[in-house]
Image (tube, rainbow, N blue to C red; front, side, top):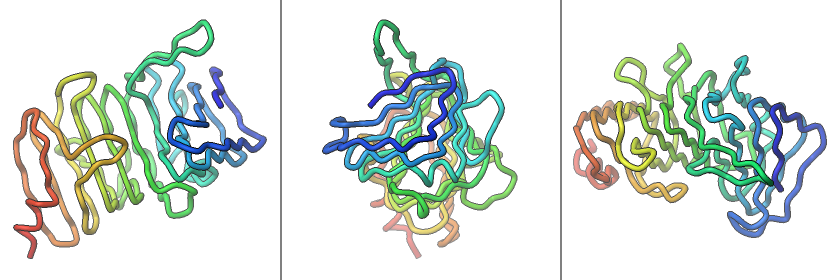
Length: 238
């Protein structure tokens, strides 16, 4: 199921008999969206991406001129696979081609997957993924989280605050590490693994990591190196 429009409003439920990630997937393409009814992909992916390359994506708050998804809209999404915001490649729809998104992804308000119908969230942009909230509480709470960017994930002055069980994060789009660092603050125990085919943590620049529960903080510089932090953190856990 693919829906494409400059502005998309979903007032009637969408159900796909999805049997695998790309079999029966739901693809929503627009620069503005309002989800007022349930979207159920069963075992297939739900992909939400901008129509225009530079349109920014915001989570947790309705931001003018951005592809915004509030908590109440996320609560209407159901899949045992992945909810994916942004995309790695272009997409042909009819006679037109939807470009790769190059606008930032802004965490504008807290979102929690516990009230949704999914447990895996993937955020993709060739620009940056940024914390746009004031509080230092978790911006994203989800079981499995994948982050892919090209110009940074969080900043040294405002890291991403998350609560996840499994995380994978690469700052290497479009093809190699570009610019910016990775700064993530995870609240609670965490396993670095594979989420949405993203394996481990890859960063060219500074990797700043905070585990609040254990008061453990490490800074390491990496360049095109995948780091298995679950092994490293077991050695320094106390």
